[in-house]
Amino acid sequence: MLWRSRALRTCAALAAAVVLAACGAVGANQGGADGRPPLQAMRPYGGDPATEGEPRRGGTLVIGNDREVVSFDPTVQNGNAVAMAVYDLLLRLTPEGKVEPYLAKSMETTDDGRTWVMGLREGVLFSDGTPLDANAVIVNTQRHIDAPASPAAVYAKQITAMRALDPLTVEFTLAAPLGDFPVVFTGSIFAGTLGMIISPAALAQYGDDIGNHPVGAGPFKVTSWQRDNRMELTRNEHYWQPGLPRLDGLEFRPLSDTETRYASMVNGDVDLIYGGYNTELVRAYADPKFTVYYGPGSAGFFFTFNFARKPFDDRRMREAAVRAIDLRALAASQYGNQLVGSDSLFEASSPYHTEAASDLWPQYDPEQARRLVQEYVADGGSPHITFTTSRSEVSLGEFVQAQLSAVGMQVDVEFFDLAEFTSRVLQGGDFQLISNLAPVDYPFPAIARLLGTNGAINFGKYSNPEVDRLLDEAASTLDPGVKTKAYQEVERLVNEDIGLLFLSRSYASTITKPEVKGIDRTIGRDIFFATTWLDR
Image: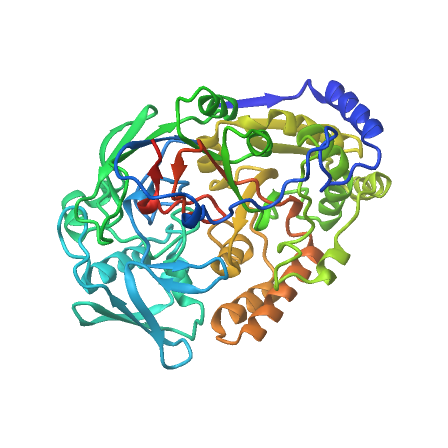
């Protein structure tokens, strides 16, 4: 459902003016006025098994999800946190960015990344009892090749040949060397992955309706699904890891409203929620009744310009938008002074970050922003824009409206329910300027998906041939030095182009009751549920 805000400009502008006058020298990474320390990483990849005690078996974990699941089909792009419970990945990324075995036991190349051989574990079964073998991997990979809209299609189509060397060994031949090819088997269903494998028997049975009838080799299987109410999963008795999963089941409840979701934790109705916003994280961070898992990662929270529409196809208007937004005011008005500021793709501690990129980033300067808007209008451009975000971000929309209006833009704000925001606005390209969230663990293939010309989540249609070339170079090489240099140059060029409007790092968190143990997660909130247990 859409909610358009037009009449709020005046009061929002006045409110922002008060904030600007009051915030003084508050920095974007400062703690709150009540003396709280600034947000920082806390258990970003999960808990410490050595300190959590002896794991218990049994119980059902109740989870508040931030949206209803659209589909379990990995060729259909959607934000599906439940998929990680149904499908185990073939390979995993370590916190250090190294690929390690998971469902598959090995992935090797002997010709600098042109040919890859994947070895599968013996005895792995799907939840329907059929074997996960080389044929299953080939059938599933071919589905991505045949589905142009699959978020993993661009990488699957680099495969020129697949063959089963034996029942547990798959050989992939690529059109060109791709040193990071194993990473494609480690991703999420939203960003695109070849690593989530569906039972071929289920594919034959359900065909195009497989998204409603998932059968994987993960720790749990879907046993009941009442849309917009709850989804129940029970233990996969065929699970490949001995002694796991520890839980009897999972229950997911779609709670799209941020306040309702957080209140469900406070009231004890759910055991765990996926936090997507600063408001949840800041409150839970300071509440001893909850356990927080959070890492800011790279990329994060930003605005996406639509390069295919006016006015942000013009660099002057993109620069004006950046210079119009005061991160100090944003921190004070929206984040309780708990904003983890950002001015580039990669966080400062990342080896892929270069200060040259940060040096290029336009600083807050409303006078210069106003001059740029006036210059654009003098050349015949219209200063009218629409900012689009989710209904969970009403106050953010009002803030942006005030900030951009103050430099001469005429701003309307649209608010959508999260599901429609994802499907119609993001994937449909129906916007001029939108809020966006993309936490990044490892640059491949995330950055190419985000900023490559044909990237699956490049919703703004940003395109720079040199960026595309560097992304290809970084992905193809097996040389860490070449990879690092290429990504640093990508970061610099994106800032030079003002390809995105960076605001802060991610607030994608996992918030649990203290009795929830064994959390094993990624920066992007995805959980490997096999090890999770309840201490009650």
